Length: 197
Image (cartoon, rainbow, N blue to C red; front, side):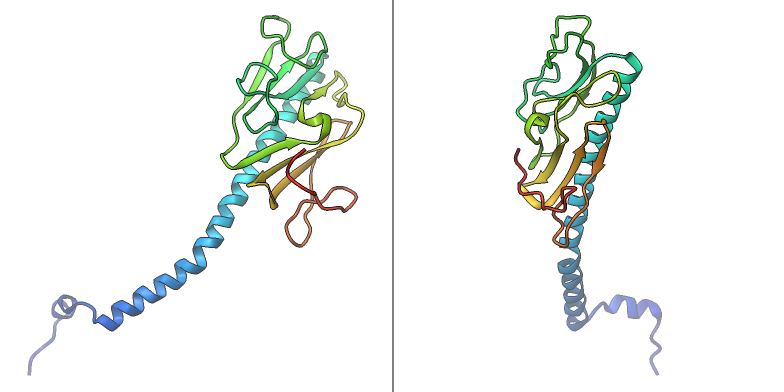
């Protein structure tokens, strides 16, 4: 009688049926796992980018109180001046000594406090109304704009792949709630209509 050893079984390999079954199981797992992994990556990207912007607003507010001066957050394409059309390409935080809402780079009194980097490709970060051009904090830590506003972060301009913050005139920031479809809601319960201003 021939004795089969573990070494002989290992060298025998897989049958074609075992190999095809393994490939089929792997294909099913990948089919189920890849879309949910992509969704997880997008949610993480949204969260990290909106948190970066929220941190910038918190910094601007605290600096305005600490310095007893007006401090502004504005979109910037070059990291020096307020020249952006949204916060997608980055933003700056600066001391607005002359209260004109724009940074005079050659003025030593208008210190640049922070440069926010460009957000990930395919994403937009836009404010509503006046909040898209600048967010000015006065020495009390309040927003120097007539109304509350919001800032919206979207992937591919898709409202179901978005985050929204509400900036109230007291200077505080709130992350929006979502409806059942994952669309951010305003405080009054209405859906965020779009990703643009």
